[in-house]
Length: 274
Image (cartoon, rainbow, N blue to C red; front, side, top):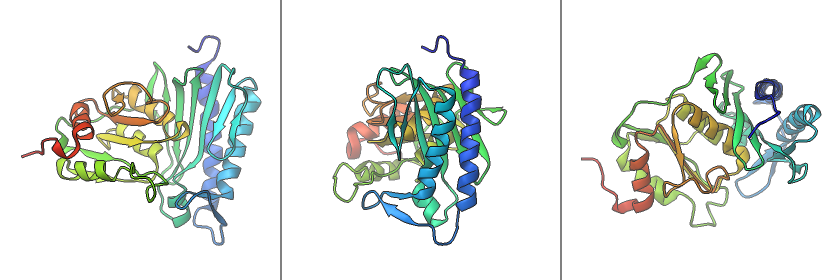
């Protein structure tokens, strides 16, 4: 899986890259006159996104020139035959960033050739929280080891999710799933950064997360956080297919996982709490 690669050193470098990028984001947060472009009707990008990714890519690929890198703004660097690949979201939560809402993150993950995440870093620049994970080595917030929540009933759970950028055109937009969870949970949240939402599941702040049609740079670091903190991952059918690719993701503390799947599979027909 990672023979010959020092994961501790790679994680240390990823943390340094995430912190450097976070400094850039903080310096431009709530700045006047920040140019904003649209990649789609609701998909925003700024020059800060691009500068953040360029900074990260230079640091990572200078140290590991034989690795590939997939970034949200820059596409793929390196061939498909590379033994390892970095997945980089230089600013997860651009809409929040542009609107002055202090919830966004830098997300970095290193995977093997089969897309299995080996290390992950998610850095929240505004709250100065650095979440890290290493496969087989646990997940941490700073020096504190992360553990998922102990919530056992879906009716007591706080979940998070989001909506795709083409939600106004594609009927597969998560609106039905969201509506089905509303009466069956304590509450729902949409923070605007899937990477942070997954870290919050790992930290026990949230009990679960679901979403479909995500990208690897959105989720791989956060998925590893959940796994290494004792949580559970699957697709909507309870299987592993497509999870690391972002096709369908359910991440939970494990205790409410089957109840979440019941809602996602059966929808409005699933039993409601009494």
